[in-house]
Image (cartoon, rainbow, N blue to C red):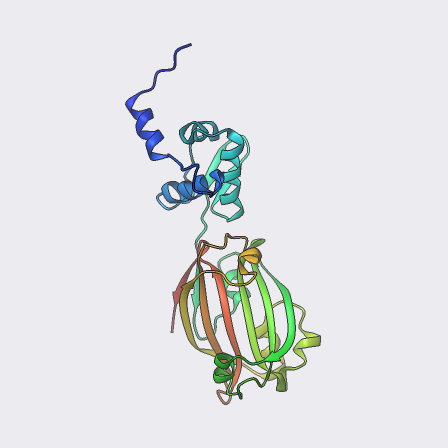
Length: 253
């Protein structure tokens, strides 16, 4: 049986060409192309070509192509509907950042279920930037909480919470998850955010693993300070790392 290669086939093969000598796995390269040419160029609900067709375009077997698709599914960019096809998900959540932003309430308002996992709780010397924001002396003991937040069961952000040991030491024993701000307001009074500094950075430490992304995929880092309503005394300095592929930040006064 003779195989006829058309000009369109040649164009597609060049368009989807991948480099087998870069040291980067084939499925990772394919995932990058799929994200660039389909996810970013398409819209939520768009269907990708069939896996067999994509495998032929990339000149790889279906197992390799499926591995690339699974990579994007794990990142929340695609979804596989069995018997129907592969579709682009509505992956960008509109997350409002303002004076009274609350993770649980903000996502509940747009119909997203949330969960909080406490990664670590400890007392540590305050880094210079943390000490300055909390009006503490450099290296003064500070309470450090690390939490992983999930939205609809998928990793959404990692937050480092820093608080003065006094009067918040009860968090070590009593806080086990849920809304940290609700816990603080119940025990210490209402608080609000005074600033939010947003930067795109590469993940540090174990952030990439916790968020389910590769080490070279940027995150949105938001540094924020929360103070008590009654006297504006610093309560919490937080450093949040959002998955940049799942969120758009809407900054409000």
